[in-house]
Structures are given as structure tokens and as C-alpha cells.
Length: 180
Image (cartoon, rainbow, N blue to C red):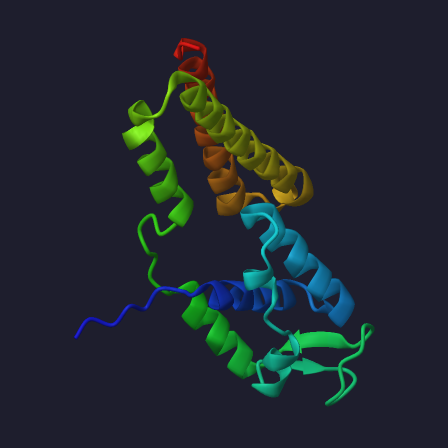
């Protein structure tokens, strides 16, 4: 039987939290803010992703707190050896090719766009363009906030921005060519 060893959305947030703490131990409040800030800049606001609790990391022994068993906003979090092992497991997990549901929805919209009246085609094209502009703005905001990291993250971010800009230019041309 095939076992899917790709990360779940919850594990992705866990990876972000453990990596943030391993990279720069900080207070509970600052780590929570930095994780929320980073995840939101990548995915947009998502209660599904941000609903997981950082307290669980402590209960599982993946982080330790300067406040002992209690976590308050000023408690300094540090990654434990078990946390480093979990971080390594998460960082080395497989990737799922194009698992984003929005890509499927976008493909379906383009696949069957011709079935809509022209005014609805235009409205859907404008909606897709707005979504692409939002994605590009989120990536540009991510670069402003975290671009100083450099290295592979910066190279990946530059690639994502370039692809988003090309996609936006293509959609703008597509919208211009649609008949009203």
C-alpha cells in the first residue's frame, strides 16, 4: 500500500513554528505573530492553517518554555532535541505536485469558459485577474518582510514573483482580447 508522506496543512504550520523557533528563539507572542505573519503572506488568511496551537508543541516536548509548563506571551520558547528531529522530518517530507485546489478550479474555469455568455466570460476573467494580482501583491509583501534572508529562499521568492508577473501579464492580455 502506498503511504502519502507529504505534509498536511497543519504539519506545514508546525514546520513554520519549529523553524522559526530553531532559527531565532523568542517569546511565545513574537513566535506566534511571526508564524501567523509568514503563513498569511504565503497562503492568505486561513483559519484552517492558523488554528493549530503552539501549546501543543510544548505538550509534545518539541519546544520548551522559560515559564515551565505555563505559556504566557512573554515566555521564551526554544526548540528541544525532539523538536529538532521533528523539524528535520518535516523539512525532508515529500512534496505533493500541484496540490492546490485553486489551480484545479482555475483550470476548470478556463476549460469551460466558452460555455458562458460573453459578459460572464469577462466577469470570470476579471475575477481571475484580481486573484492573480492579490497573489502577486502577497508575494511582493513577503519579499518586503522576509526578503533579507537571502539564499535559496530569496531565489525561490524571486522565481515565484517572476511567474506571478508573467501570469498577470498573460491574464491582462487575455482580458483585453475577450469580446464584450
